[in-house]
Length: 259
Image 1: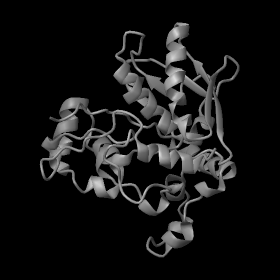
Image 2: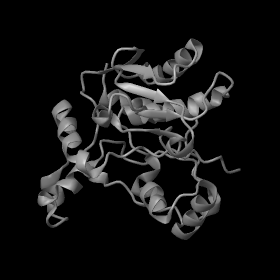
Image 3: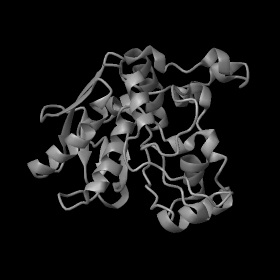
């Protein structure tokens, strides 16, 4: 049986802010720097393309640990705030990661908005530092204490993975190759109302593997992987996606932010 597809869209900075954000990411963690010299041998003119280099720059925090403050823009009840932060801190099982609530200039700002800015999303890693302090860096549309616990595992932990700098696992070349483009475009247009351009960006364009600090093989059960239905894959088999942080996720985040 196909799983319901988790449709999270990591927010991207506007072009005019991307270069400065890339410089910030490299300053915070020099390992974020894109492998320009190596890639320039296969991508002519890359060394002169600041925009493309900014895209290839990863956004992980410093390797001596992540300690980020969290605020809630719509002032939800305390038990909901505690529950969300509890799931954010699930990543600390194997990594030096800590999220704590604060009302004073929180670095991670959570909203539950609907409408045009609704859905589930987060900015990627250090990009949250480039967002206006009165604006959200993560959105959990409609989350309340009545939201099923499985959604806290599936959605909150996924979005927190983005906040820690993790991209979507299903956009690795091994998994993108399994998807039928025509079927995917039709599916996401019908179910999400996305344009063809959005679908190509979010589902059909693989991440440049040489810019990744990831596992050797794509993990179809990663919390960072969409649940892709078999109706849009070339072999009819679904990509199961992750309903919770799995061992591969824990191993990876422990390498990025070692205790």
